[in-house]
Amino acid sequence: MIVAAWIALFAPAGAVVAIALLGIRISRFTAGLLAAGATLVSFLCSLVAFVSLLGEHPEERAHYSTLWTWLSAGGFKVGAEILVDPLSVFMMLVVSGVGFLILSYAIGYMHSDLEERRYHAYKALFVFSMLLLVQSGNLLLLLAGWGMVGLSSYLLINFWHHRWTAVAAGKKAFIMNAVGDATFALALFLLIQRTGSVDFRVAFQEGSIKPSSTAAVLIALGLLGGAVAKSAQIPLHTWLPDAMEGPTPVSALIHAATMVTAGVYLIARTHSLFELAPAVQHLAGILGAATIILAGLIALVQTDIKRVIAYSTMSQIGYMFVGVGLGAYGAGLFHLMTHAFFKALLFMAAGIVIHALSDEQDIRRMGGLARRLPFTYRAFIVGALALAAVPPFAGFFSKDAILGSAAGAGTLGWALWGAGAVGAFLTALYTFRLLFIVFRGELSPFAREHLHLRHFEGGIAMAWPVAVLMVLATVGGLLQIPGLWAGVTDWIDPVAKSVDEASGVTFGVSLAVTLALSLTGIALAWMFWGRPSSVPERVRRRYPGVLRTLEEKFFFDAAYDRVFYTPAAQTAELATRYIEQPLFLGSLGELGRGVRGLSGRLSAVQTGSVRSYALALGAGAAVIVLVFLLVG
Image 1 (tube, rainbow, N blue to C red):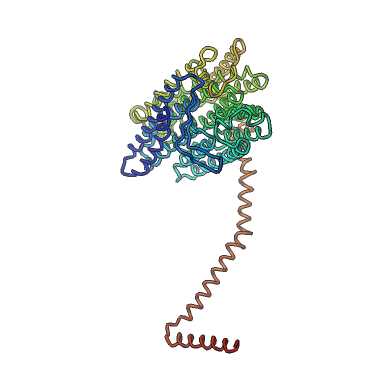
Image 2: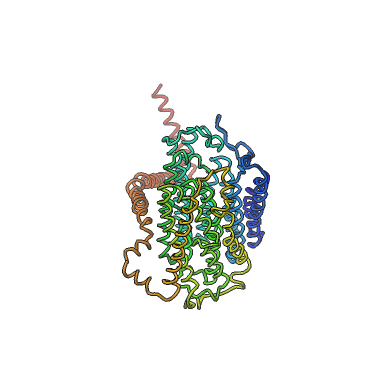
């Protein structure tokens, strides 16, 4: 089991090294096979670890393994150590399983790109970084994986670096995540100062930090800052929609099973620290609830097919934050898994549409694609139904597990439940708005002119991963049925014990209300966009201010530009003009000119005449003799 876990970790890293060393000696297709094959090896080894843990007693399912002492300073030691337990194996399966499907899809999607080898190497590096994050046996190694995930995402988002928008998006993602990395690191400094260790077994030990103390609150806040940035929750969320500048498989990998779910994993892994500061843990749920509504409203007016799905990712991660913020770790992680299935499905189906329309992403130029892309249309329907939480699709079971837990968590729980219920309505509305605009109606003029089809809608390399995800998005929710079968929660409980969800009448009311809201959202989407309707345009004319607020994304980007970017840019400009230029650049220029002038004069002395040199030596010797005589 331990050997399998190490192989699962290093297989993608081996693919990165192989692609880098072999370079152009291997074909681009072979590079894609190496990256996808290594991820498949990780998935198979994760299965081995899962089966091994399954045969053990629940209380004994935690195994540490150290390769070497990575860092040693006095009595402080940190090992290159992994932890194999139910939580890490659960994440390994999701990351490597869905990651393998996305990397396989990318072979077809990126087949004509000249830099395809570099792309596949970045993808494999991303998978390795994420596996390092979830398998780390101590917080310092987890922080290393955390940073590497940020670096990998930066490389992938601005992969097409000839586009300035991609470069700007990559820098924005890197900087926003660096803010969270800094708060995470500060939390570790304080944790080391209080406990003397970053080892899970010591740092999480009961009694090492007093509950609700200043230290407990600050540590939890620092960890929450890292989680909020990585998972794109309010207020560090603005990088995620811009990340759509990367290739579509990058969007699927970052938004489905990996990077954005890291914050949820961090809260679940460090739950004992958050439970020492319950106000901070509840703050995580509140931020998640706010993100659910804000992202849902913004998604209603987006015109880029990938950005609509990106805002739905923010919203769905908000549900997960509500779950772990209330202590329903099993429900939050269950939604993490099902979300990986249907969100990867939606992104990959969108990728087929974009490919078929010559890289067009504006949904206003689409329409009537259902007949021309029937397989993609069916895949999108499955993903949309799962996202809208319609039974029996996967999202229905996982989302209602979170809302059921919220309904049983008192006053705060009911407030978060209300936000989640509104979010269910918005999710169904914007999801089916996207579906109807893209696929229903008559074929648009743009699509009629630019639509080009490869055999089987993008080729078999792109179609078969989509088909697998269609199945998972349909039946994946059966791994846990609220009130009947708690498969994921029971598996996670030995690591992070979940609170009880509502039962009986309370759960039934929660289920009925949220399902009714989802169906209402679908019905309204059909009325507004599924058939000819003037309602959206009338709303636009009647409420221009509201529409502008949503289109400007509640002015978060404008506020950050005004508060942070503009003052920093103006300060840099003033410093350059009045400090750097006159004091440094100017003085260095004068110094350079002086040296050049002196050297010019000295060079004039070099006449090349031997008699002149002899005269100079004689004169110098005479001066020296005269000085000695005078001194004597």
